Amino acid sequence: EFQSIDAHQRRAEREVQAERKRLEEIQAEGASFPPMDEVEDSLRKAQSELRETKSKLDAAKRRAGSVQDKIDAEKQKEDEASQKLARLNDEKSLRRQRLFGMFQGLKDAFEWIDQNRKMFRRPIHGPIGTEVQPKSALTAAYLEHHVSSNTWRSFVVECPEDYKLLYREVREKKGIPINITTVPQGRLKPVTRMYSDCKMDVLRREHGFFGYLDETFTAPDPIMQALINNHNVDKVIVGGEEVQKALDRKDLIELLSTREAHDKKSGKVSSCFFYTHNRSSYRYTSQPSRFSGEIGTSSDEVQPARLLKPGCDPNIKEELSEIIKKAKETIENLLPAIQEGQIEMDEWHKHGQHVSVKLKDSKRLKQEWTQYKAKLRNQKEKLAEAEEDAAKDNEREKVQ
Image 1 (spheres, rainbow, N blue to C red):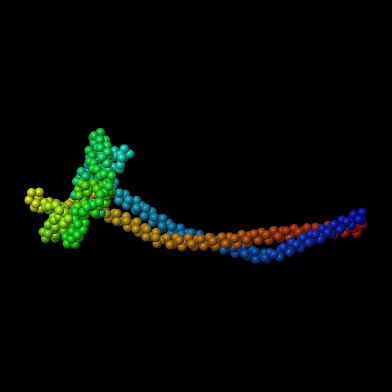
Image 2: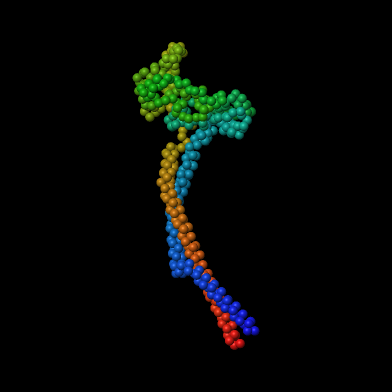
């Protein structure tokens, strides 16, 4: 029995020594921890810094958002003005409606062609009046005055087969009046000018001319060739106020009627030109007599264009263009602020990430500190229990 008590006592003492050693190890671990007040101070500072960073980041976002709102508002202005301008600039559509109102049956012919384009071998163009784009109201008046109404409502085909098919289907079968002209393969031939470069230089320098009528408007190649074929728009010249002075000198018509040196034909040549005088516009033509050779002339006043006139008040277009221009300039001026704001937000975001890491580390350290204190307290309790058990064994041994 004494041996049993003695063995139990030794075990209890060994247990005390083990618990004491474990306590010493745990206490040694505590040496690596900074003081708790420092940990809590670091945690408070990190929390405060993170709040401040978030506040700065939110402020930067608000500033950038305010600038972006201004950009969006300007972009909306630009888009709305651009859409309105695009509608106003759709001269082709506006002119088509005018043509439909002027010529009975033209709308029906156009709609049939538009719905049956796959029937044709090559593209069908027109009406011609919808395809030209004059460069000014004045040149629109010149062109409209010079070209016949039958041409404006004509369609252009590119091969004989399409001519026959279109005429048969629209004119013969449906009874719809239609004018058709052919431009083989839709190609624009190289232009041979009425006057040599040398003579044209003289006309520009001494008589007030600017250029040829075909240079005053744009059109697809098949349309341009059709106008050249039917109305010689490549041979008509256009001038300004100085032309009247040249007419008064009596030398202009003689110059225009004289053949070029390389032209071996006899006789005079006809001419046609447009010009302005005292706020009015005129077409002047000269024609040599087939019998006497004498030059006959005629002049008629040009009225403002009806078909080719601009679709709306040019001032409205100018206002819309100005809105678009100012909106683009404003956006351009605001973009650097957006870029700077993004840089600032990126910097605060990066700083916030750094502070978040510090805060996380401080929280982790505090948690480890708390766990360590619990672990230390638990080990002290275990040691106290082991010492208490060992003390009880000593008392039993004394009693025995």
